[in-house]
Length: 127
Image (tube, rainbow, N blue to C red):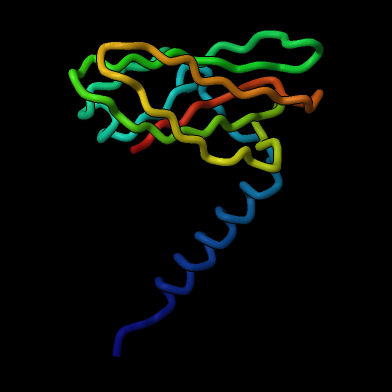
């Protein structure tokens, strides 16, 4: 009969490791990963710029330009996610939006956030 002691020790270590990370409420948001595109979006011929943040009458406005290099229209779904200075989500998440990008043209996507805690944004594109 095999000893179960090594498995118990491993389980205890995993529990301790999992608990030690829960005290840290800061998420690591990589400022270079502000744009997430499903592979299907790239395959459909969509090229996107990183979102930029600016001021819109006291609120933050994020915007990004997407380009359709194909000779047919492409329907793209998107969502902007806002984060505070510590990298925590700002709730509620905005609804998913849809845009039809005509062939060979560019469209500007945008999101406005009035939460004073909002500091960063990430754009997620999918079909």
